[in-house]
Amino acid sequence: MNENPLVSVIVPVYNVDLYIKECMDSIVNQSYKELQIIVIDDGSTDSSSQKIKSYLSDHRVQVIEQLNKGLSGARNTGLKFANGKYVLFVDSDDYLELTAIEELVRAIEENNVDIARFNGRAFIDKLNNPIKQNMYDFSHRLQEGKKYTKNRFKVNRRTFASPVYLYMVNRDVIKKNDLFFLEGILHEDELFTTHIFLNSDSMIYLNRFYYNRRYRENSIMTSQTSERIKKTWDSYIIIFKKLELMYSSNQYSKEQKRLIKRQLISIYSGLKNSNLDKLKKEHEIKEIKSITGLDKFYIFFHKIVSVIIK
Picture 1 (cartoon, rainbow, N blue to C red):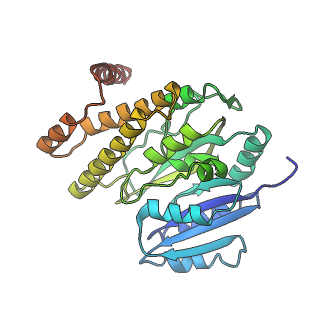
Picture 2 (cartoon, rainbow, N blue to C red):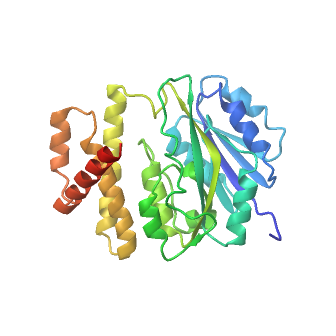
Picture 3 (tube, rainbow, N blue to C red):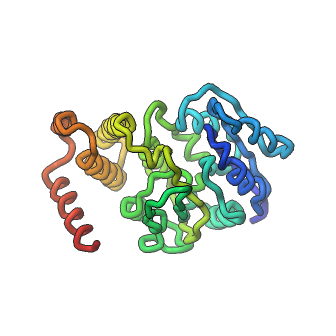
């Protein structure tokens, strides 16, 4: 590697004063130094603002304050300010291993790829519920150090994981295709990551656990209030309809459409298993026409297989 390309690290912040120091320390202390660290204070009402401003003595850090727009809105703001060759997203209650960016940049530069995929390790913050530890481990499907080009859609169908913090992406993929996060919904990664996979030409996988994902009480991932269940349902319906339009479009190849269909089937399965009111759920599911009988058999078959494996 003859040069040290700039990496834009985008950190949305909202009321995480208990965790933001661990997150920021893991970024500013990276072994790789050529960083643009964009911290978006998304209308925090706790002491997060004061804590992130203490990092402004590092010239690489810039803090952008805005009224609360949600995670998608904060990430979009970060993308507007990003000027690095590569983009990496880090959620503000999580943290990175200290050699992560250096090793990712080396892999992506030496292999001239658009995406570097890697593993994440989930851990519990003050919760006793177990976490399936291999949920962010892709070593059973992806080959360490292999450059994926022609077969990238197939492997990403088999190992799809929506969280954007599990990828370092060439910013040209985002710029040239005008990609952004859909605002006002939950689980926005499902759509954004699909677009990243569809619009990139190459990928490499590093079998390393670079990302540490915290699960905490009352977070989006753990909250199961009726309001959250309804918001999740509405969000997935919006995402599903967007994907349906993409699937019916002529702009995508057969292999790309297989990836989109994989997402449609996955989200449809999640909708069927939702805890939403039964009558509303059945009514809206009946309106879905893009899932065929063969798709439903596929869902049923894999459900049976998963039960047998357990």
